[in-house]
Length: 416
Ligand code: UD1
Image 1 (cartoon, rainbow, N blue to C red):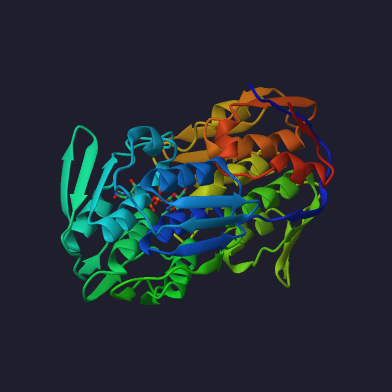
Image 2: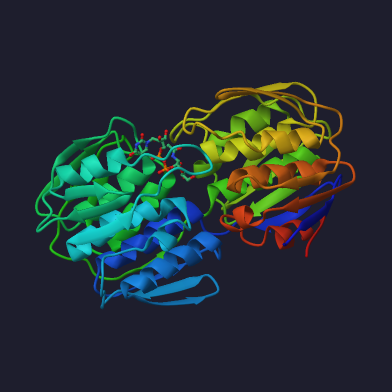
């Protein structure tokens, strides 16, 4: 069992290169299925979830090569539209393959992604939207069979701006007959990245900034090259690590706008954040204040994925931080582990109240989920003494080489 060992209390100082975004790379990999052609993604992070996506592409018949951050997908010869349960279960976002497979093959058979560590994970919005595009959906025993002799553009209004449903609609509608108008679509930056790739492949997608996306169907797409956008959640995690350790970090290749929803609470706590060209700079005070009130919301609100690492930073310092989680039901499982390290946190349903303490202490803790694991890492960097962090498969889903990145800025951290 791998363990990350951290001797905490070291002030972080230096530069961290931000990798490509997991939450962008996964839908982009699914999108490569749409063209019977070769596509190439650069700045693709090397993560367990990316490997899981590549395994699905290979199962469907794609030839995929991965060299460092470059992934080439040749989707000329697909031999099936069926994704087995074992591959579906490897990551929550495998459902985003549904729209791409149905568009390319006319039929998709997947299993239900089911619940996950963050609570129930319904896909009713994905399926009702696909039905609007002409897809017949049959569900039995957790298996979903979708078929469409042809996809037709439609007017769709989402009751909630679901990121996954927006991605599935985009993937299905690009080559549908006629125009699709999607209202109340998700506005997350990763949606913009997906639209940019699809347009480079010959799709005709317009709008998006105001929540309405217009997709004019085209007969077919061709392959394209695309650079995956920077990971705003990885960036937010390292901003939190700097804040927790009184550090000064420059995050390289990280445009500020997508990360900006996390700035206000960090600034309220005394951090100075500045965009310097394509880099992001943070200088934290020696003693952090409270982060005030955080409410997770769809973009441009505060991202649900950044709440855990920022709350971990809020544990050390003075002042109170209140977080209201509005997206997922069960996002505070890491709190018990932070409590082992001396944190003062009360959770009541979707609300967590953190009272800063003067010192955290190292402990043996286990990642409970991806962002919960990131929170424990942040707390361990700030804590006095040694922390041993286990259940690293959660962290490996979404952070590329965190140990190397943190060693380079002065952390005493090793993995064995
Ligand atoms: C969510 C995040 C996204 C993040 C991703 C990975 C939001 C709005 N979305 O996207 O930023 O990158 O996790 O961690 O913050 N829902 C339904 N029915 C559906 C689909 C969703 O009720 O068919 C509800 C869920 O119960 C939940 C919310 O919508 O309350 C989740 O939003 P959604 O954007 O769909 O989740 P992800 O696509 O996983």
